[in-house]
Each structure stands twice: as C-alpha cells, then as structure tokens.
Image 1 (cartoon, one colour):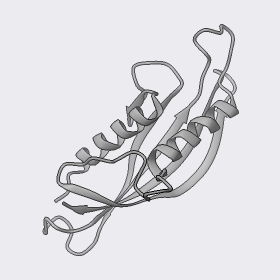
Image 2 (image 1 turned 30 degrees about the horizontal axis):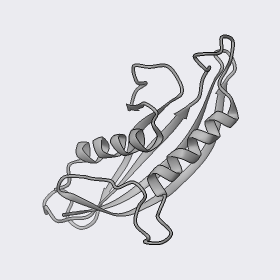
Image 3 (image 1 turned 135 degrees about the vertical axis):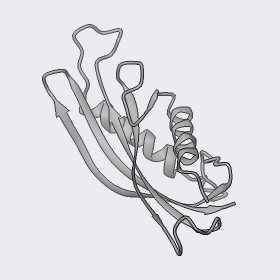
Length: 148
C-alpha cells in the first residue's frame, strides 16, 4: 500500500526545491509571504482499496500560492502579478517536462511508489484580501501512483 504521508512529503520537497520558496504542509510555514501551502484534498484507489499492496492510487493536492509584501520594501503589498508568477512556478515544478527526453523536470521520489501521471485538476485562480495586502492563487493537481 502506498503511504499518503510519503507522497505529501515528497511533493512538499519537490515544490520547495524547484521554486526556492517555503512550503507549508496544510498550514502556513514559519515565515511570512511569499510561500506555498500544500493541502491533500482527495484520494481514490482502483480495485480493492487498502487490501492489496499493489493497487493504484490517485491523489489530489491543492497548492495555494500566497503573495505578500516584500520584506525589503516597507508599505508594499502582495500583487496579482506575484501570485500568478508563483502559480506559474508551481505548475512548472509539478508538470514541467524536458522537451528532448519527455522526463519530468523535477523528479517526485516516493519510497515504495512510482508516479505514473501528473495533471492539473483545476485552477480556480486568485483571491485577495485587501485588508492585509495578501493575494492567494489556488491550483489543484492530481497524481496517479502505483506501487513500485
């Protein structure tokens, strides 16, 4: 059986390494914006769930991009451009492929599992909170996994 926590940990590592920004696991990280929040959303299995160690699994994760004030510019606020840029980086980190080889640009290393498919599930886009100068941008990604 594929352990979901291992998939979540691998995706947190991939997103953080590929974007060079902090990633919180279903919560705000210990630093201020800009950052990502990765939240597990949905799970489905094929065949007999949890009784066969070789069943495939499909997981959906929400990536929330949180823009914010620039630490070196007092009075600045998060911008839609910053949030969209973060969304572009997250999309490239998770879905990007090398055009010459077709291989993922950023490997997703999961003990005991292999990722067969990565896709953008939905992209509701940006929301803002003008009161505190933060804009967030939401994307959901589906991962298809099989036991290695």
